[in-house]
Image 1 (cartoon, rainbow, N blue to C red):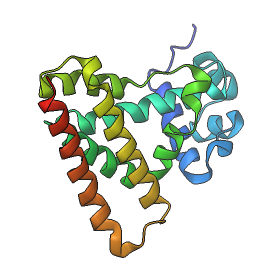
Image 2: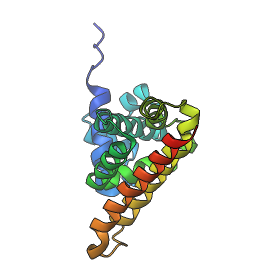
Image 3: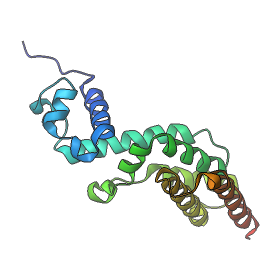
Image 4: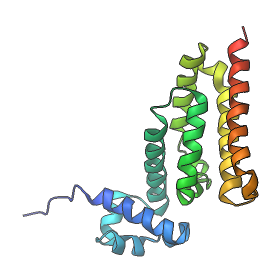
Amino acid sequence: MPRKPDPHLEDRILSAARKLFLKGGENAVSMRSLAKAARTNTPALYRRFKNRKEILAALVRRIQEDLSQVVEPSVSLQEVCQRYLEFMLAHPHEYQLVNSGLFSNVGAGRPNLELLKKRSADWLGRSPEDCIGVVLAGWALSHGTATLLISKLVPSAYEAKLRSTIVETLELLVRNVSLRQ
C-alpha cells in the first residue's frame, strides 16, 4: 500500500527554512540541512520544490503573507507605513530576505504593493495609478527608515525624531495627493 503524502510537510519545510535562514542567512539553507531540520529527506524536498531557490521564494511569499496580515487592518497610508516599519524592525532577518533581490531572480511580484495601491485609491478618492507615487514614496520612506534603524546608523538620540518625521512627511504627501484635482 503506497504511503499517503504528509499534508504538513510543506509547512515543516518552510518553517525549517525560516529557522535556518534566521540562524545563518541564505547560505545556511542547503537542501541537506533543510531536509534534516524538516525531519524528512532530500527526495521529499525535491518532490515539493524544484530547488533551493524555489524554497526561498516560497519563504518570501510566506513572509509577505505575514506582513499582509499586519498591514491589512490599516485605515490610512500612514498607518500602513508605520505597521510596515514596526514589522520590519521586529523581523530584521526576514526583512533582509524579502529585500535580498530574490524577487528579481524568481519573478515574484509585490502583492502588498498592489494591495496598497488599491487601498490608497479608496482612502484618497483617486485611481490606483494616481496613487502609485505616494505609495512608492511611503514604501521608500518606510524601507529607508527600517534600513537605517536596523543597521544602527541613526544615533539613538534621533530614533524617535526619525520615526515622527516619517509620519509627518507621509501626512504631507497624502494631503498633497488629496488636494490635487
